[in-house]
Every structure is written in structure tokens, then in C-alpha cells.
Amino acid sequence: MEKKRAQWGSKIGFILAAAGSAVGLGNIWKFPGRAYEGGGGCFLLLYLIMVVFLGAPMMLTELSVGRASQTNIVGAFRQLGHRRWSWVGWIGVIGAFVITCYYSHVGGWVMRYAFGYATEGERIYADSLGYFYNMLGCHADGTTSFPWVAILFAALFMAINAVVIIRGVESGIERFNKIGMPALFLLLLVLLVRAVTLEGSRPGIMYMISLDWGKLSFDTVLAALGQAFYSLSIGMAIMITYGSYLPRTENIARNTALVCTMDTLVAILAGFIVVPAVFATLGEQQIGKGGGFAFVSLAGVFRQMPGGTFFGVVFYLLLLFAALTSCMSLVEGIVAFLTEHFSLPRKGTTLAVCGSMFLIGCLYTCSQAAFPLKGIWFDAANGTTSPAFCDAMEFLTDRIMIPVCALGCCVFVGWVWKPGSAIAEVEQNGVRFGLARVYAVLIKYVAPVAILTILAMNFATGMTLS
Ligand code: TRP
Image (cartoon, rainbow, N blue to C red; front, side):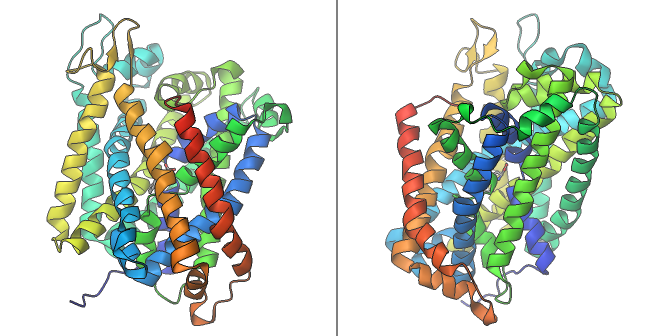
């Protein structure tokens, strides 16, 4: 019965892997648009408050649940509490599965664009919208075809994930992140220097540090909180899995602080890259978010900036690393659960999980492309994609499953397992957790109320997705 569990090989290995999970499309693709919409500086401030008071305590909670239980995300709740609580883990597994289905396909598109800028930048510039739709099998003359380019790249993206996961925690995930994360920081710095030295980027920079409280609304507060959870990879119980590979000698509190800082830093830097660059090239009103923005509008930015094609490659490589390291944490969470819960072999399980997520994800890509699902998810009247399917997937995960799982997690730790147990877990090996009392209050009272509020608002606003 006793089988030796995998462990991180080094401290820095864990930190980079956890930061790799956190730093993803959410930071570089979603954050800048959100920050712009939320009024620049105000949003940044609000976001920081959310990370410090809610995100960090939640991450600490998940990591300590993982390390204390030394098991997967369903097993952890059973072991520390009772069978009754395993539903929290189940939501995490299912949520991670659904997220990965579309995340891996968007990752595939990102990879396609990295290649695209490297080999045929001119074609992207000539017709950036057409290029995007072409990749998805939608042609200018109104015909559609199987989006094989997008699908092929998504398959490649998933294959890289599968290879890394099959190799295991230390020689797969840890090793990949040890190369990928420093590379990501380097790419980010290159882009930052480029963006802030662009002529005309000043108003964008000023916007990002301006404190115009008039733009602040209750919605912005909720958006900041939702974004913080998504960005820190919280509320899918994935950090439980990563925490379960953490040796007892590690200081969870300090590691949490480091990972949260890195994740937030990347998000803010991305904001200071994208917003000033768009201000400088396309003009303020062009800032947007979501697929169209990252793939279509940014082409205009790269076309107009000196050395743009090179920076285009750099940007999509950055996104690619970010997406890969996040995706592999999601896959690992699922694989760890399946292999332990059902005693399945790692290799076969990984292949089956990745294969099925890839196939389901094809519906996501195909629903954008209108082929072969024309009329169902394609808005023929407007000639645009009508991403009902995609929206439904994102709504289900971002707006429902993440908050529900996070709520379950903090109620479990606050009231069943008790904050004292989490604190005891942190304080192993003589570690001092100075903020223990603050933590207990946050996890018991503040976090559940905040998450319940988001959930209620999400239900109330329904499908008004951003
Ligand atoms: N944090 C990742 C990002 O910023 C994506 C993500 C969301 C995630 N929820 C997660 C990753 C849960 C792992 C686990 O893009």
C-alpha cells in the first residue's frame, strides 16, 4: 500500500513550477485588458489588495492541505476531513478537465502564431483578421473548411504536455519549468523595454499609474477578485497537488509569498507592455481582450513597431511558455488523482486524459471555425463566431466551478479541518508563521464572504461574459 510519493527535487524547482502554473494566459492575455477596463492604476491597486488578502491565504491553504495529506485533490479532503468533503476535490478535477480542453487549444493557436510571425509575418500584417479566421477554417468568401492548422498545433501543444507529464514530477514538470520560467522572464523583459521605449507610449504608462477613482465600481472589485483567483491557479485544487509533492522541510508561507509575487509581477509587467504598446500604435480605443485582441489587434501593434516581427515572435513564445507550464499543472492534477484513486498506470492515464481533452477541445476550435458545426455556434448572420459553446465552458469554470471549489476549500479549512491545523502544517520544522492569526480570520470569515458574494453576483449577472 505504502508507495513512495513523488517530490520536488529542489526548492527553486517547486517555486518555478508553482509560478509556472500561476503565470499563464490569464496574466498576459486577460490581465492587461482587465486592468485597462478597470481604470489602470485603480485596478492595479485593487488587484494587489485581492492578491494579498484573499489570493495568498487561499494559496497557502491549498498548499498546506496538499502537504498535510500527501495525496491527490479528492483524497486530501477525505483524509483530512471526511468522505463527505470529497466533492470539493471532484469539482476541482472536473473543472481542471474542462479548463484544459479549451486552454490547450488556445495554446495551440498561440504556437501557430509563434510560427506564423517567424515565417510569414507579412501575411499576418496584410490581413490580420483573415489570418486568424483562416487558421480556424473560416474563409473570406464565406466558405468553411476543417480547421486543420489550428487542430494540428493544438495536438502538438497537448503532445508536449503529455511527454512532460509522463516523465514525472521531478524530471518532467520541474525540469521543464526550470528552463521555461527563466526564459519567460527574459522574454518579458525584452518586450517591456521595447514597449516603454516606443514613441507615444507615455500616455499608456501614465494611464496605468493613474488613480481615477471615478472608474471604480462594484463590478471592478469583483473582476479583480475573479482575476486574482484565476491568475493564481486557485480554486481548482491544483495547488493541493503541487503542495503534496513538497518536502516537510519547506516553508509554505514564504513559498506562497514568492509565488504570489512572481505571478503578480508578471501580470503587472504584461499590463505595462500591452497597454502602452497599444496606446502608442493603434490608439487607446483599440484595447480589448479575449481571442480577437490577442491574435488580431496585436498584429497592428507589431506591424507598426520597429522590429515588430521579431517582437511578435518573442511575444507568442512568451505566451506559449506561460500556457504550457499552466496547462501541465492542470493535467498533473487530474493524472495524480486518477492514478492514485483508481491505481492506474501513469503513462496510459496521461495519454488517455490528454487525448480526450484534446478531442473535446476540438469542439471548441471547431465552434469558432464554424466547421463542421456551422449554424450551431457560428453566427452566420453577422459573419462572426458566436462562441456560445466557448462562453459556456468559460462561464462554467471561471464563474461557477472556481468559486464553488474555492469556497468549499476555505470552509473546509476554516471550519472543519480548522485553521490551527493549517498553521501547524506551516509551522513544521521550527518555521515561524508570524501572520497566523490574521490568516485564521481571513480564511474563516473574510474569504467565504468574499467568494459567496462573487458567486451570487455571477448568478445574478448570468452570461454577461467579459
Ligand atoms: N493560472 C493560469 C493562468 O493565469 C490558468 C489557470 C486558471 C489555472 N485556473 C487554474 C492553472 C488552475 C492551474 C490550475 O492562465
